[in-house]
Image (cartoon, rainbow, N blue to C red):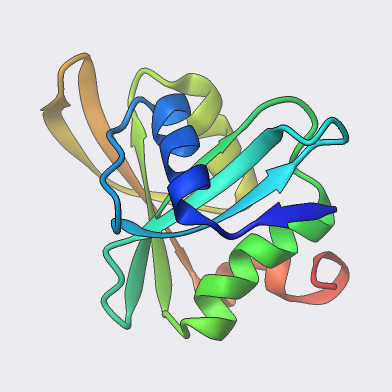
Amino acid sequence: MRLCLDASIVGPWVANKTGGTWCEGRGTAIGKFDENGELCAGVLYEDYTKANVVCHIAGVGNWATKEYLGIIFDYPFNQLKVKRMTAPVNSTNIRSIQLVTRMGFTLECSLVQAIPDGDLHLFRMFKDECKYIKGKYHG
C-alpha cells in the first residue's frame, strides 16, 4: 500500500469528493494510492483541539482495507492522542452516512439547514469505541 501524507495533494482531492472547500494549511491528511498510482482514498484532519479532531473521509472503489483503516484511526487516537473524532456528513449523502456508521461513528447531533441542500449531521467516535486501533484491524 502506497500512502500520501501531503495535505496539499490529499486535501483538495477530499474536498472535491465531499463537496467542501480546500484552504492551504487547513490540516493534515492521509491519502491512499491505488495500483495505478491514482488517489483512491483520503482523510483530511482539521480543527485539532487536543481533545477532538474533525475528519473528512472520501474514497472511490475498493479503498477501505483493514490496513488503511488501521492507519487512518491510529493517527488521531494514538499519535494526536485525541479522545474523540468528529465527522460532519451532509444529511442527503446516504452512502457517507452508511460508511461512517459502519466504521463505528455515532450520530451526535444535526445542524438543521446548516448546508444548502439539507442538514449537517455530526457523527462522533470515542477512542474506546474504535475497533480499528484494536485487534485484527491494527497492523
